[in-house]
Image (cartoon, rainbow, N blue to C red; front, side, top):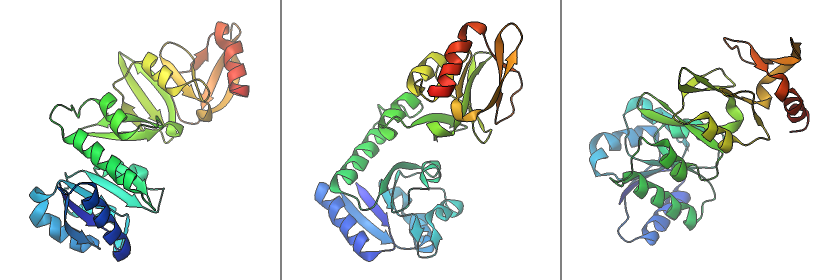
Length: 250
């Protein structure tokens, strides 16, 4: 594989170069860039030669995400950084992995394995289930699709899951809405029961999204959320005891 390293610290760039080429003699680092400007200039003329990019977040002239405002990058990118707060931006920027420094050879090997899987013609990149196995082995996120891109949503950022007219929607705590190609049954198993509760056949709620609960007629309860919803959320009287116990104790 032809590899480009975008890193503004020369010692780390040299270490990463040695690690990449040690893993497989067929891997070749064809360029090391230290700034947004330098990276954009190189990519404009050599994109077709690049198989993979290792990229830091903080560069000499700003955050590397500004690169994608200047040029369309389709090459798989592995972000390698000391910052743990840019994960979402990384995956929205063609990132396939997010490695925290100091990295190990095993971290880099796994990144190559992910890239090879994603580039395999037999791998269907439109199937979020396969992508979850490659990108999110720790089961900490759900993958959602918007237009032609797939984004990871951390479980803690999910407010609710709702089935509406045979389409499953995911709503985040910021009230963002996504279509998710899974059944409510599948999602219930994945999300677990400690932080999430299935109030009815159509809906799963995150405890963190519940602002209050109030009595409803016929011994039911009504749930108010931290985000607006179109319809009243009601827990049937048969599930009220279970729901209240979950709400209090998890």
